[in-house]
Image (cartoon, rainbow, N blue to C red):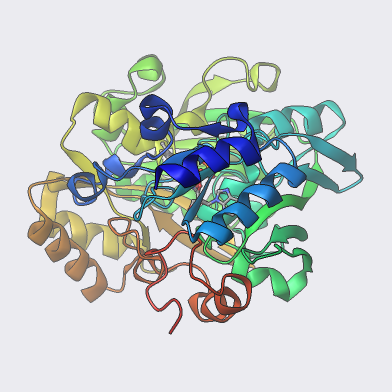
Amino acid sequence: ATEWRKEAVDVLGEERFLLDPASREKLSKDYYWYSPVLEPLLREKLADGVAAPTDERELAAALAFAYRHRLPITVRGAGTGNYGQAVPLEGGIVLDVSGLNRVLEIGPGYARVQCGVRMGALEKRAREQGQELRIYPSTYAKATIGGFVCGGSGGIGSISWGNLWDGNVLEAIVYTLEERPRRLTVHGADLLPYIHNYGTTGVVTELVIPLAPRVEWAQSVVSFESFDDALAVSEALAGDDSIRKRLVSAVEWPIPAFFKPLAKAFRQGAAALLLETEDGSLEAVSALAAARGGAIEHVIPPERYRQGIGLSDFTWNHTTLWALKTEPSITYLQADFSLGKVAEQARRLKAEFGDEVLLHLEWIRVSGELVPTALPLVRYTDASRLYEIVAFCESIGVVIYDPHTWILEDGGRGEANVMQRKKRENDPLGLLNPGKLRTEGA
Ligand code: FAD
């Protein structure tokens, strides 16, 4: 076993192949520990070595090397995934692609980038040129584009542009794991086996993603007496096409009490909306809110966009991040509520579980349809209670995407069937992130 390590250093170079325990440990972990179910199961998992290529040639050499020695390859962007997607279950090599970080081209309506480009850096570049990202996760400052496409789903901007499957990836360059890794150029429907694939069907080195025209965004916090009122207004705003928006999030009290850096923006005891809407839209927002007794409590004007902390830093799964700072035992679920029934579903959940489950919803548009998605916080006791909550959600029509599993099919997102087929073609030895796709090789 030590022999292949020596050879790896020879083939890949000392600076591009890391064997020290600190690097192996650090780069074998992601944010799986947000799940108390996954934490004890993944804590000890460790790569045998880390390959850190800085261009495609080095990356292809690492893949050919892994194939020759039958070593598993687990790709890693920034390691901000929450389901242990980037944790090497069977050791082998972690392929850290954060060094492939060049923006290759920004053109009208698109950007061509290497997979390791951070989304925040691309957003900044695009905005300097009068454009911006369409969708990005709340981890955009750190997260890589490759990691978002291969491990994420949607986020800020999804209220206007949908999630990853709504035309938000235009092209991918993908490497296979074979004796001689092939370099594929993939478009259109052929992209499906690579979106949210956890790196099981190929290694994405380059992406073309669509950009939107730059908009000046105002951020506002709107307060309401009840979560019911906040929800109703969030739905009206989400469906109002005359108001351009990037973020519509509704949170119930006491969640805002977790948002310590923004304490002054929230009213004690009040439910709230956290919004990004186009400059000049606040009057319309205010009118919608007033219909349910709501009032704008705090505004961050467009000039201060991206200067210091912003409202999106408290939404999506960042809500869990802030909650964990105050209550380390909190965890979360991922859910789609039903349009037209969301208020009733929320009431039933609260009636059943009270403050054991705390709600915040982020509205998105999927294939043109509004969807009230949510990452409910759960005051965790044990796994069986967690799955009782899941079962109750499902009994009232709330769809759960289980974040407490590393098995892609059990998480419920991504086209597992097409992935399984593609995996047999691209990864005949089943070395790409083994253990993440249930029926791999079947
Ligand atoms: P990684 O964690 O490094 O990788 C993710 C998966 O993709 C892994 O399986 C990895 O093997 C694979 N992978 C990475 N790069 C490649 C590549 N080049 N080729 C093939 N496979 C690859 N997600 C959302 O979708 N929306 C959110 O709003 C959101 N909010 C979050 C908030 C918090 C606080 C946290 C901790 C996580 C959140 N996430 C969210 C999850 C995660 O941050 C995002 O999905 C992020 O985009 C992942 O990017 P990454 O570079 O960290 O990927």
